[in-house]
Length: 88
Image (cartoon, rainbow, N blue to C red; front, side, top):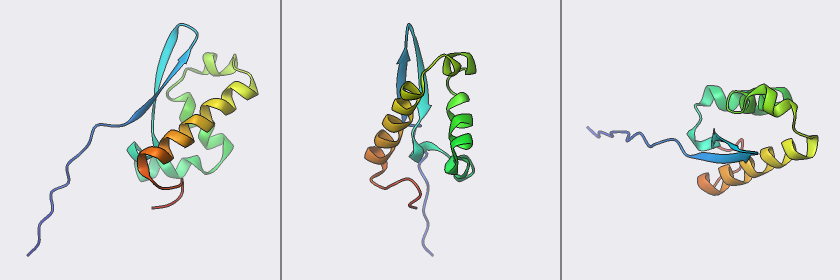
């Protein structure tokens, strides 16, 4: 019989600095499948980001600033997983 023991790794995050505050957003590879499935729409992505950056802070960002956060999060997630979002 073959046996495998899964070693749980510490979550990898992206640190976002906005003004004087810093926020940690887990990278894609550190999410559960249930969490990752919610990122298939703009609304789901916004809700995910809002769990890690308060809504008041997000509401004060421009569209360009918000898009920069999403873009760098996707890039860093891909770098650390070696796969595109949606690949398993």
